[in-house]
Length: 334
Image (cartoon, rainbow, N blue to C red; front, side, top):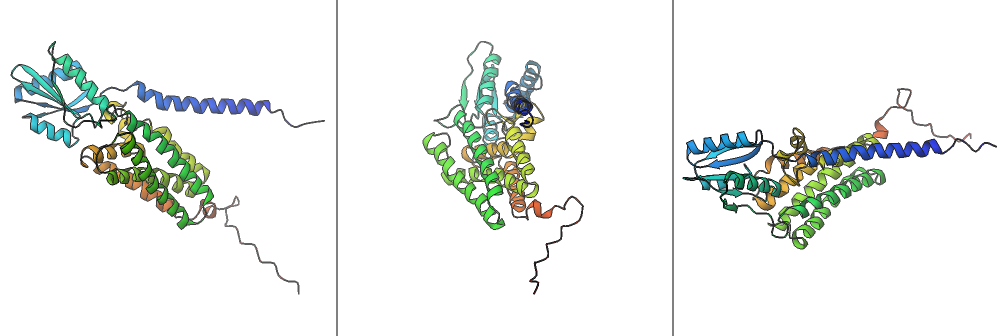
């Protein structure tokens, strides 16, 4: 008696498929992390013009392609550029050479560490004073807690978008669910990160608004593409947000420390834009927030419009290429 095809080929197929997906994910996450180093990292050299030009040439010779150097006449001008998020650090020159380095570790603790090492090497045996003019949060000096909070936010936003797409048929209800999730996620996640972990300074409601916008952008993307394309749209949004957006976000380092152009591309995906916007609002009074704010607004706006549209199954034509005629109502033979 036949009991159907052997389940062995299917089992092996599942194993091969999952391992292939695993390999793609390992490559997507591990490769950028294993190649973190400065690439055109914006820095300032402050001091007299001849000395700044000479020091910039030394930096270019010691670390080719690592830094994008601008010059400033004094430390006050350099500090303003750090606080405006135009640079990650400033090398201050005095009569005897390198007199100190100013950092903005809130923008990137990893970049601050690299610049400290460069400054100490340039000191040629002398201890170079280091001042952090825009420090990270006291409870999270390495930025690890802030970066770690991003992954749960991404995963829950993807789940919320998928569930709202699959379980909610009404268009107004679906859109309301996306917005409600984003508001609640912003309030809850920010409360944990800011009040419990002490990883964020600044105004709670402003930070919660940013986190809510990040959640809205990701959830709306999933719900919108899911509404338009069905299950394939949910998968496409998950790939863009999770498989590309998370490892290319630069939140654990800086966009300029990731392999290019991947670091730049990551800033146009919700995780990267969200990390940049949150740092700008929480640590720098909104400096450098414009581009990331527009990026998140675009993802959220387009996603909400698509989520409010008619389901894709109602827009598609049947296999024959003609719209399916509605079934004629049954008539009473009498």
